[in-house]
Image (cartoon, rainbow, N blue to C red; front, side, top):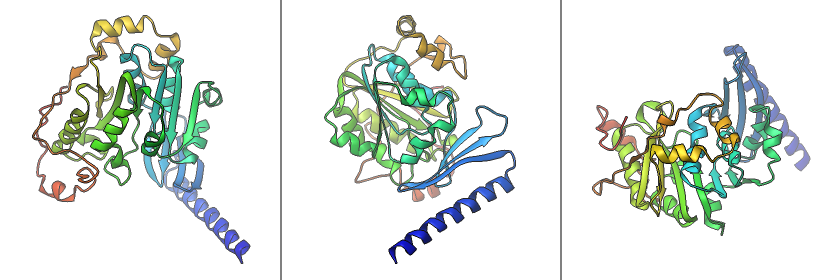
Amino acid sequence: MLSLTLLGISLFHTTENSRFVSRINQSNPIWQVIYHQPGLQGITTVLKLRDRPLGDILLVNGKGMTVKATDTKMMAHLPMLVHPNPLNSLVICFGMGTTYRSAISYGGQVTVVELVKEVFDAFDYFYADAKYVRAYPKGHMIVNDGRNFLKLTKEHFDVITVDPPPPIDAAGVTHLYSKEFLELARDRLAEGGIMAHWIPFPSSSGGVNDWNTFNMLLATFAEVYPYRMQLPGWHKIGMHLLGSMQPFQGSEDYFQQRFATVPITVTNDLNEWDQVPLSYFKLKPLESDNQMLLNTDDHPYLEFNLLRMLQTSAPKSYPFVYW
């Protein structure tokens, strides 16, 4: 009986996979499904846009997770450039592997934590150098929940960066935006360590639907880190946030000196898809508003947002965002 049950499950997956692939191929002739695999945490799919090298999409449970973009590279480069010597770094969420791939270009120890094992397996479909990235001797690719990993590890990191799957207001993802998560990351930073986070703009359909919510997430970050700065993403679809328990450098002069000392692998990776000028790196202080609600585990305003969305008739002001 058990063997028949397992056979039935296997046939079900095969049939469903074939139907999904067939529907995609029939309705979108420009797309090609090259990987489609169910797992314990969901179904992972890789789509390629025919004849376009950067036209890759990663889906988990049918939801687009990420594409190849310089913004994702910057989730590694920005905090690792700000830190003068990042010897031990942590990337939470793997996605296409872009942030991890950028992080190892600095030559230090890098750990990446990903909840969905099949997302790791799909990495080879996105990059021709995937096997070399996998073989990086100071790299560690761990299947686990990112928050759970932080809670259990005894390591301390020079850089912690989060490449969150959209939409960030989804159940589970919101736990990477609570005050308690930010405090947990803070407690796992080494002396002078940098925490990097990403907040989508309301116009990006990334899970932030109004400017009040956006400002709430900024205020939550500012509540935990006494020293913090912000920088709009390269494609202006979100904001990079950097926080630390100690003051850190962010001037154009600092970045000029920093670029003079990093390995050539860093600049090559940074400019792989776009030529990023030194003038881009203009960090500004992130101000705090003590009157704002905070996103916490007990009050996950980011996730439970229906009433707030219904009450929002127009975009709210954005006093802490600069362009």
